[in-house]
Image 1: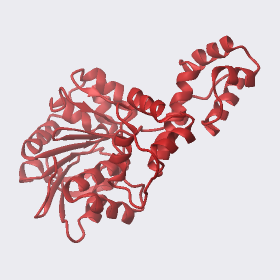
Image 2: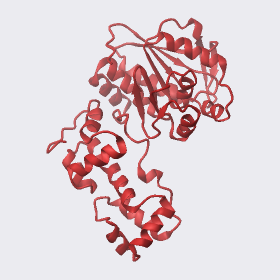
Image 3: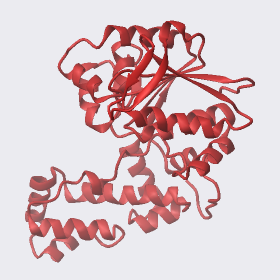
Length: 337
């Protein structure tokens, strides 16, 4: 759904004591930059009771508006805080005043978004039931366990389902805000805001919160540390099971056991994820599907398509299209899937 604005677009940021400052300031700055001068946004800091709000870093957001006095809003953004997930984990009731404020604002707003653990507020209100959603990777399991009716996608940066948008932790709120700007004013406005802020152009919502290299724990076994480092350094090299076993001077059976023990997966599956990470980055850097397949080590377009479908639930072309709507100056050539 596209929201084309011909007037000031009012965006309410729901804040509260302990809120993460960047969950608020990051998206706010995106809207500020995007709104100058042709596409004005009017941000409103709203809290349950109004007045000053102290953030988790100790800085104070002064003179917020009480939810009851906020008036009509076009978009609601619920900021996050670790305590929201912690309260949910402890099965403690979330603050009734915060939930009441969110309910009032969400009822008024055609579009509702959350940053990081702000998803727990929407979840507690039942607004995400039967929907896809995400949050910070550290809180994703808690969200899924506490609210089983939500289809939690722990690896996504941001997700849209109907009028609801949820995003991962902290800096992903900037990606979310750029997506909102693109909805409202088109890709060029989002590109302009990203360039002005000197940030990576909007990352697609389906992109992983981090790469296999970051989520792979350091291997205890020295042989495995060397082997995984060599794969990460050059995913396109020959990393078949026989080749890796020969390089490590062990049997294929022993190497398979090491992967299961150290990484809880098979050598082939782990190598495929490393190569998929590289292919994603190549696509975002402007490579064609064929080039990304070749340079990542996945080899063929068809192998790349199967890997994208299996792990990301999308196609390479769709993945790149979602990104390049807000990425300037990249034109790829060659075969496209």
